[in-house]
Image (cartoon, rainbow, N blue to C red; front, side, top):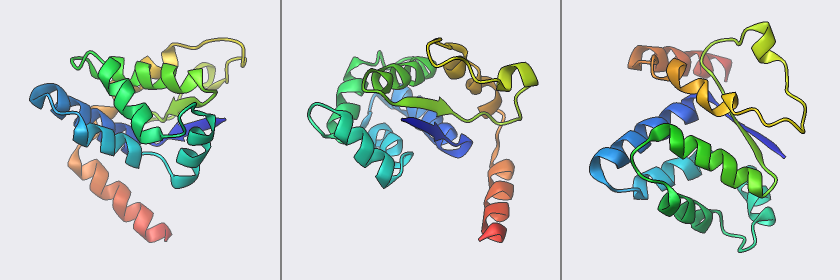
Length: 140
């Protein structure tokens, strides 16, 4: 199963993780990660988990997280979900270059998927988000 988290979800998790680092509280972060997934995605993930509880899965993952590096959190999320057969992708802000857009073989492990998104997402500001929200509203 493959799940792609859009850039808005990635940015929200990133901001929430930064708050968790500063304040030492992961409860809001856990909720924000949970909200990044649709109900259908959560149900599919829970079917793959031994205990069947995504909330508990996130709690355990956050307990394992060092709590001081946002990129490490994304790597951990990718690795932990990968262990249960869920390939999570983090949508990047801009279009990828042609060689970056090519899908790696399913057998290859591409560590760049997790590390490349962070530089672009930090450039989003409130104006960008407002414009995106307006565009989405117009589409509806």
